[in-house]
Structure formats: C-alpha cells, structure tokens
Image 1 (cartoon, rainbow, N blue to C red):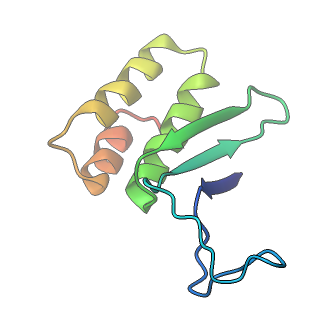
Image 2: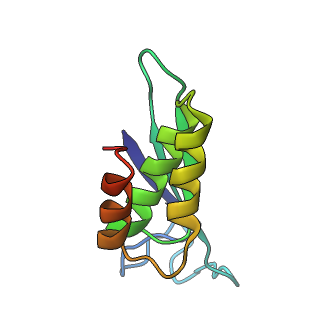
Length: 104
C-alpha cells in the first residue's frame, strides 16, 4: 500500500527565491492538490484510487473497492457495493452488515 499527495504550491511559509530575483514572488491563482491511494497486488490485480478526503472511512471504502476488484464472487461484489453505497451506514454498521452476511 502506498499513498501520495501532490499540489502546485509549497507548504513552506518562507519564500524561496532564484538567484538574482530577490523580492520577486510568483503567486498561483488557484491552489489544487490530489490524493491517491494504491495497493500493489502480488498474486492479484493492483488498484489505485483518487480520494476526495484523506480519512479512515475513505480508506475503508478504497480497501473495499480493492477487494471488489480482486473477487470472482459476483454476489459478494454486489453485497460490498451495496454496503459502501448506502449513505445511512456508518463504518461500524458496514462491519456489522458484512459480518452478518459472512464476508469477513
């Protein structure tokens, strides 16, 4: 597993100048960034996903997508998709739901 985050502006507060260009600073009009989480499979498919948030719940959803990518059981894929797409479920309720369907 690996995670990376790229952006177009530095996180340092001091200004870094090129030689001979002191007191000249280029400002970017828009700050943007991208977070990507990926899993490299040894005996299965690798998976990479762009995340909008960088928290544990989003990581669990990414891990579920990785599991779906490497499953052959279509019924199991359907159950996991149903669980992660249900907006009324919290992460604890997803765990209870999957354990009740015997997909540990």
